[in-house]
Amino acid sequence: VENTHYSVSWTHDWLDRVNTVVSLGKSKDDYVGNPLPIDNRADDVTTYGVAVNYQMRRWLILNAGVNSSDKDSNIAKFNNKRNVMSIGAQISL
Image 1: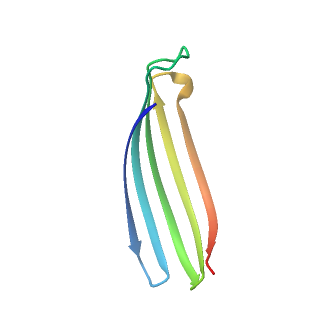
Image 2: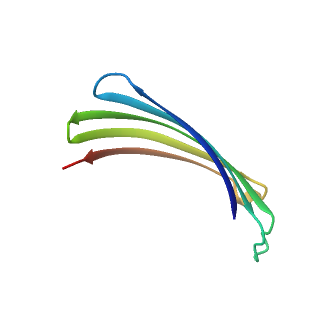
Image 3: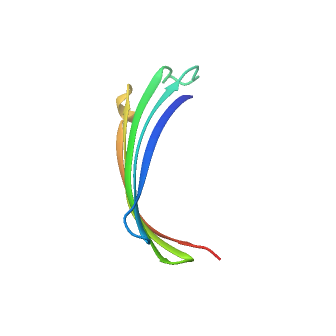
């Protein structure tokens, strides 16, 4: 698989304890020399996401976000769209 990937993200601090992150990515996967009958498969993938982080304490950051990806392949059965929602906590000692 030959992969080319580009991405950009932007973080904005709204308050001392609150920030948001916006991201956008683009990648191209070329399946060359594949021994399977799907030789010459090419996928274009676009990803984007939004997340918010809240530093509740010095040692505790709460976060929530949404990430989406859209895969466009030259072989129709590999086309797909995915949306992932997440919530989490980062705890440091």
